[in-house]
Image (tube, rainbow, N blue to C red; front, side, top):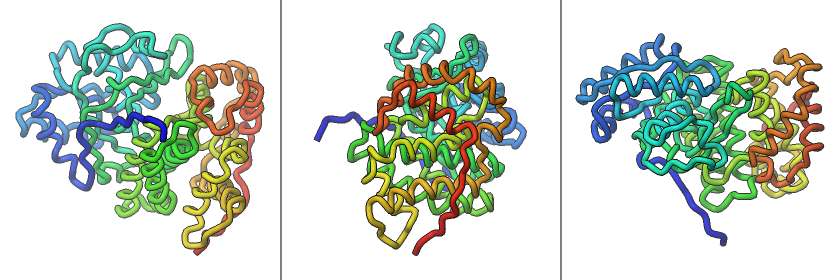
Length: 397
């Protein structure tokens, strides 16, 4: 067995009402917190609730609610300025992956200096400990609360920077499924398929190992039977609970096994055409699984047998089911293809060479069981532009 390093947050609090424990965790780590959130969380009263709980624990707080959609470098600069002006010594992220990734970047830059892009590819390493960061996800999908990576768009170059160092790992993750009840159907769909793609890619990754396999399989056993239910009825707490736990497990899995071709191809789409990360992953996942299938037949068969439930299928039959069932799930969740999202075909095709180059430069495609060439990635982008999610799959068992 090869050697492996497994990293997680120092503390993970999971379960209904675990958000109420944030004051205790904050009081152990600082005196004044900057809450990094968005306008939706602020409007729902969640940021106010967080401030109240912190105050009851003797922790002062300030709020930066400037995160909007995908995280970009100027959010990091703005939040850092507020952090410094307010003399904070602690970070709390409250929201989806964009809020968490922004706070991760602030945590490192606040103590180590520089521009967040300096840390890409290890050009600048975080030599000083980051600001303590408590991550509180309000969606079930990104798993960012349990990863040592942040994805920030360089707005000057239209490139999504995937930056991975141990210092970006939050100190605490608080996963309260009740907070995800406010997620609208499109967000539930996008983040849910994002979580599924994390689990699948962690399981088929060339860097997978027994620890990550255990988490990835457990995540899929939670996500696959519950995602559609959470999408159809946001008040279904059994489904929300399963999705939150599955997302957390998938996050720990891919943080340690790495993602593959789907994520490598997804980031350039998000950077150039501003497609939310979860949606772009979902747009790509079925076609990339078809491309990769011959190199990971046994592992896809394991996934297919999770979809088939009680009926044990043979290797190729189960692998085929994995691909067709993912297609059907995307249909059921009303996931559009790239054309359906409204990206002009000419603009998309003219960007394919750059997107393929950026995808390869990220390193993620090299973890794929079938490692693609630049030409194969370009061809896959063309396939995905008007990809048809088709083929009704009946649940077995």
